[in-house]
Image 1 (cartoon, rainbow, N blue to C red):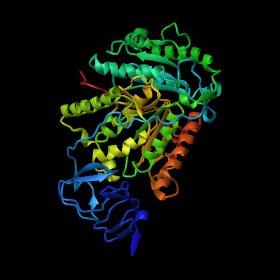
Image 2 (image 1 turned 120 degrees about the vertical axis):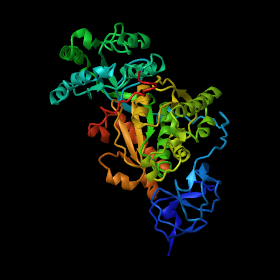
Image 3 (image 1 turned 135 degrees about the vertical axis):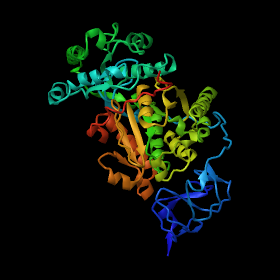
Image 4 (image 1 turned 90 degrees about the vertical axis):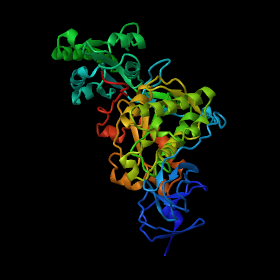
Length: 517
């Protein structure tokens, strides 16, 4: 009995040598339809690739109409195409910087959307959440920062300050024993970015006193001020200066107790969707990520861009092999060259440690059907939709452009999202095919499942199911616009699944560059 090809597999481009299976097929199964007559040679899991034609060793293999690798042995029709017969290889990319640049149509004024957010005043983006931050300058002050934040947990605090989402400690493993150039600059960019983040209503800086990352230097270099009094420095304290842990905690609690009543009147008001700044990330990707969740996120991202908002993605090591699709849409030669410079930097950076940038796909990625970084990257860039690439930013750099932007971040999820959020993103969308449970305070993070079985298995953690695309129940466009509506709802206060679980306090992870001295 022949099985209908379209019900069991999807071919993404007419030039593709492989199809992605919607369901696991056993050896001997026969597929027919769409010009295909194939007998499956071995059992192939859902999300993995089926060879549609024979390929000789050394030939390139295409998916999405793009090269995802090269046959490392002969491949027969009906074979499982994966790590055992598909590998990396060099090939030229047609960068054509800016040649396909085409701005999206803007939304008419009458159709412009709003969300219920916290207006932060002239020159600032509105907040989607309302947190107080205790920011640690160094790991040595991390516990003290947590002790201060813990004092303000519980029902009494929530009743007294219902419009404050919580007091959170932003702690990390760095701040000392690091080079006082780029590694320190990156850390300070991140900490300063969090201090002035639109979802942070107020903050205290806590240090030890003898660390490399000196708080006065951080304040001066980044122009940090007291949110309550822009002409004065923010509240900051050092454990060594105050005389130890207990005294510093008492000082922090006292300072914050005096500051909190000034925030009691903060309320949500209608804010333009153009104030949204979206962080896009994918983690625990699988063979469906580039077919369902990521393209749907691309549709939602384009909708934001049409509203004058900002949409930012990163993970430089996970656009490798697909960067030409972005340079072709660059708004200027400068933007395109900045992106290519990042690729060259990453090639050099990984070589220093005896690694290569193409070693990225993780165990879970491969279990889910992804074989090479080229394949993973082609699926990942689908998050970028069709908008032109307007700007490229350094890790944690303040994002000032509207439209689609890129930030240099590693593929590691907490580190990547920390950079995007510290750059100003006040909302996140995280796509996953394996089941990431990521949370991202102070920015709410919507998690999108790439397939229905995952969504049903982890429904307590997944906010939206893009697997309906694979099921044939919805189109990419429909899921994308459903996600766009979800983003407006979450920006207006609807809690994400990760927020309901209390996730997000431990995921703050600034990128640690350079040696530990």
